Length: 173
Image 1 (cartoon, rainbow, N blue to C red):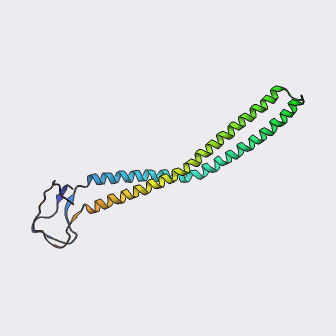
Image 2 (spheres, rainbow, N blue to C red):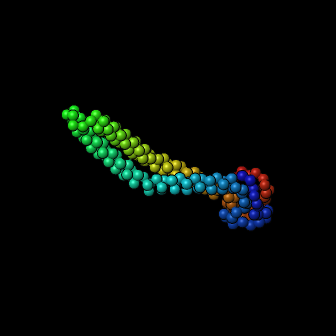
């Protein structure tokens, strides 16, 4: 602890709790500001994710359902096309187009499912943000306690008999 300013001299009368000296808390204040800034940023990220995630999840689930429905319809059409091909009613090229359409719809369904899984994985990010906020709040509380304890106050009312530190000196808190 570095003494920044002395507020009393030998012989002064002091009241209980009166500040005796100002301590340099620049490092603690800077750390507190950094933690507050990080807390603000993480809180904003959490709020943004909480606001958008339900909509993203609903949209992703809707896309998966639509892709699955389209895939089933394409498979039905391809099966009908296969029957027509085997009976000679359509060309091999038409039958192959139907098979290609099934493969394309399967790819779309897989893409929609992968996207939905990615959105759902963001739910775990909510817990991570909440844990981070809790840790930052604990750190902030600790810093505030350190700042409170860094004040040199008179423990009781009375007269200052001697001042045994100088401005700029390192003193034990």
